[in-house]
Length: 120
Length: 110
Image (cartoon, rainbow over all chains, first blue to last red; front, top):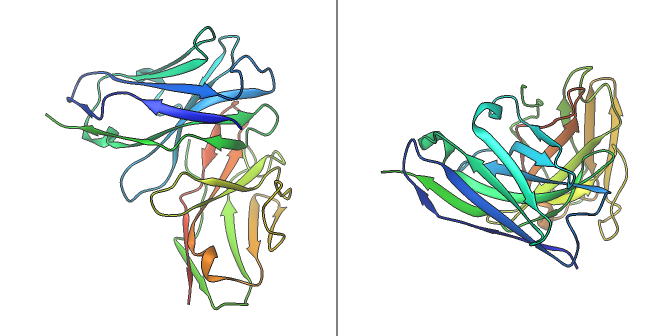
């Protein structure tokens, strides 16, 4: 059974960089049938897609966040990561990592989510 | 990239049917049969309920069904049950090789 687990700091200061890692078990991020992505949800609000990557290195980002986001993968550790720079309070959210099917981009597996608060 | 439009809330009584709409444009919902639906209960990760407009993953009740007409996709839940009370989100692939979520719909079972 595939499992995804987010890890990283729960508190980040304004203007700094938010960094999260997703560790995948029960499957490989080198599987050519899937993308691996990040989604966030501010408290009490809806879901927002941040971006996704293919194991080959191709990346796809939400245009509204593209200037601040980098998603990358480490196939040797079976992990992928999110970096969001110049954060503000508006970036406070639960961050989920997830797996998208290649065709259709539907998300069939999600991590449990991790709350990241931006505050000094 | 604007969020797809969903009603903020819908409600229904046990046993009834409800439909949640998800309206986009020709570059997302209307352009591809790549709409999926997710159920999210409080404090939990979303769960895939429908993919590729109308397909149900294994294990999802056949009370859940999806359809699409033009730029609007719909999720229908028949035989409403108390356990269906949750937030529901649509997701669509877009012409710029990205995806966009709907704003979410809160379903209340009366």
